[in-house]
Image (cartoon, rainbow, N blue to C red; front, side, top):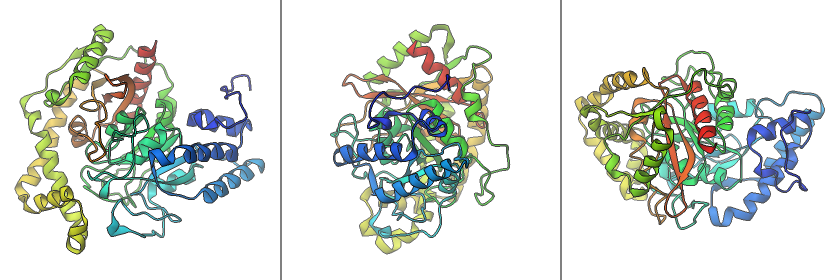
Length: 453
């Protein structure tokens, strides 16, 4: 095993520091056991959970039972799978058969599914240890949960996948999954200083996950490296005919492609988007330095005026669809919903069908215009957020720099490559052509290596 990846030289208590790719190889090679790795993660959780509050459900005994079963299977010579022995946190909107799924609302308190969401089942099939359920905002919309940013507990971790981002950032688990309907993967990943990846629309099944807005909902992942998001995302990209927006296609070779060298040096389009002025001085200064560093590898591209309607279009779609999907909750417990969510539902009830249809249809034209940009570059480079994670816990921050890319269903990834004036993480968001996720991840890995020198 001369090419084995190095492990920490210690008594094993810092195994939680291992990235998933390194840990999976070490478990397969017998250099560490799954039980040792899970125990290290549990020790980390116990040390930090009081301050971070990333978990809404955690059963240590069950986690260790899964680990022991994986170790026994390994001793018997059985394949553990690509994620064999790797702990994964699950956002509490994905059904889990042995854990409650309460969707961040008292209206679903005690809800116990009888089967796993498809994404969770695929993780199990790949050998993952389902560690527990991470905190979500109320019904995966805007009202915050209790999670705090691991870099500063007085700041938001972002939302709605708050616990999933914070758990990875705090070293509690190497991987977690979340969802994005506007900015709910990219924003918390950027605020917490981890890698967040939102695949192209309908690349991962949403069956068994809370439906907020079917036309916009994406499953996404969190990790500490681009290689790790490729590893976990690829395992969930099998076709599921029960998701109405999925179509049969080969599973993309994310893991294989991400480690390849690009055939040509990647080129980038710097896109400020129509909401550039909502970025603060940290964002403006950091991206000015970044563009200067990339020099002739990047060109600024101005978007046509039609892009100014995108925020309103996504809002119309999201409010209309969540009004339909949360009608039962509104009718039986409107007084137990947050004021913000009630207002969104009521707005959605008033939207005209013709406006909703127009908001959906305009994506074709918007995507065609972006296709012309991608004809010239490998990826768009743009902010992930409007600045550092805001102070206070009564908001999850603005998703405005994610809106365009979610609306269009394009793959996006945020990389923790910069920091703001208070030392908090700032994310660099890369966006690629729809369906070309493997190339986007390869470009992201190249950019990370290039900037870190």
